[in-house]
Length: 110
Length: 113
Image 1 (tube, rainbow over the protein chains, first blue to last red):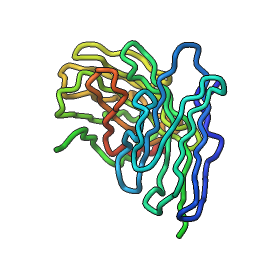
Image 2 (image 1 turned 180 degrees about the vertical axis):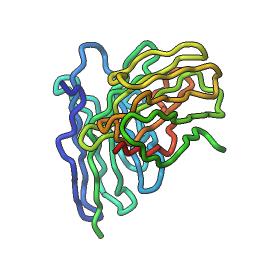
Image 3 (image 1 turned 60 degrees about the vertical axis):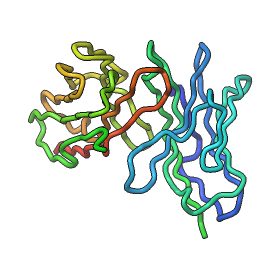
Image 4 (image 1 turned 120 degrees about the horizontal axis):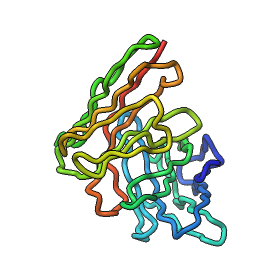
């Protein structure tokens, strides 16, 4: 059973609109959750991690243990946000083995 | 900054052939891993290594071998390629300090006919 789910394969929004990319997980312990992003013709890279409680490029994500969710949000989408977004759960002794969700492609329309 | 370098970027194999995907990193990272990316399934961990001489299996190890003779290199070997191994393969490394940041290579697209 998939432990990280992202229900939307594709999400299209207009520039300036709010965006929310959904992520749900199943994990018995205390989860470490991350969002990775892959822009066109670029490498997959870390966007943000829940433990840092940071905002990167205007994106935030809050871990909701009750709903087992880690949704990624941005109040005003920009065209340069168009990319593939992966939610990931860290596990293993080093916390470096990741279980990735299937990904959501965000398309921000002009 | 080279970071994580994967070769080749593209490869076409026939069923039964063997090949090695190369991965090298110049960041002195202890942790290295291989993932495969398939449509609708995200990235799945094949094998990983926490240091030279140490390797372990991930979620989908069957049909693949790895070795880690140096800190820098972590090759992935396909012993007898099958069409089910058609995928995009990513090598990634990390300092292993539990920061959650994996550094990825550009990917290798493999097609098995």
